[in-house]
Image (cartoon, rainbow, N blue to C red; front, top):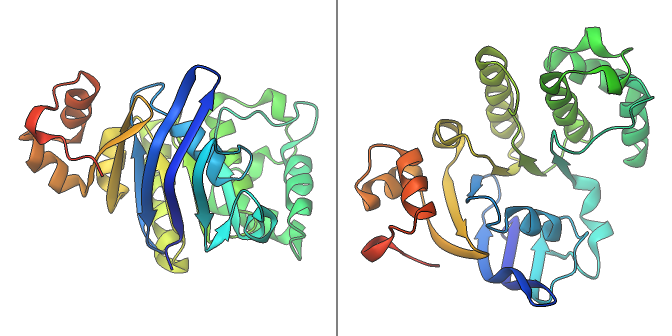
Length: 248
């Protein structure tokens, strides 16, 4: 059973089409990059996987669960991280994590918060109010929030945004180690092509709401005859696909 399976998924808002006829599957245990320029449909796709957005057409399944009709069966073993989703400003980092951890009914929650704060190196921030965090600190805490329940399926939106190179490398190592240790399935949306090339087993390339290409980083670089994944991304974003396009 695939960890994620999307079949003929479309989402329209009146005359505006956000995603059109999208289909892909992710085997359990893979780390997959979801790439595309702004407006490609990445956020819409992740929202559908979380069950917070209803498809106009098509089906969305996570671990065999229909996310339209039965999402509460899958949500306890899923989580999502984005540095752009703000935590309540007046609560401390620890208070925020207690609130979110309580939603998952995590046993020994305070011990789990201490553990994840140590792993992500922000113990010194636990008593700081969320509104006083820097952009990079918010990124760390957002990832910690998503890791509290040790998810089997993890959706990451720009997990190293605003981090300095050393901190970003630590986060990538943490994500890679977590996947290796737990067998978790991870879907990663990022504009950092070097990061994607380093972490991902497979890549899904979206543009204008459609899946326009996919493959391993090495396959895509070879297919487009480019030096690296960033130049592949630019080729697709600038519509220089030509004969290389391989829509799934």
